[in-house]
Length: 208
Image (cartoon, rainbow, N blue to C red):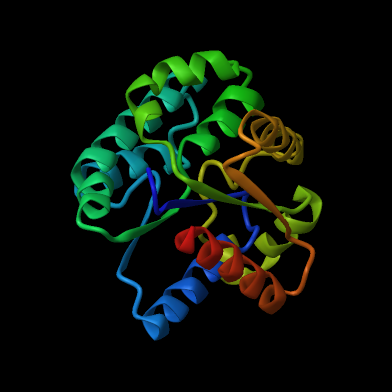
């Protein structure tokens, strides 16, 4: 899906700040775009997001979690992403299928193949470019110590460090699966430098 651009990485890797920067630069350049997120982006998917991330849903099984993500994803694609792409817009999406592969497929132990099967409908709509922010979880999760962020911890934020290490390893496995689509950027770089690097990768991709 040309000009469908997704952003991936573990918790607190700076994706939100990078996307906001890209938005501002796109405005300056006159690039027509939309931003969205997974799970979420539309009414139904946002409701599913609330269920998935609710800290009180401790009994949720990995299988249930994976299928909720898949359901949200397909509704989001059909209702928002595909119409925007058909209209000639660039779509900037915070997370997509790669998150399910890293979190549920690898970290939850369901297996990559099981996640691909659960997301069979979405496989026809893979992004043309994915930016993966590579940052060790021990460093990234220190940002949770920020008081404002701490008060907003969701069900995934609240997982132990071992889980987030598995997510980190999972993303590296996903990168091996899709090396032609995924560009891995060093999340240890200063945010301003990382933002500019990300913008260059995106602009070069759009111009292809």
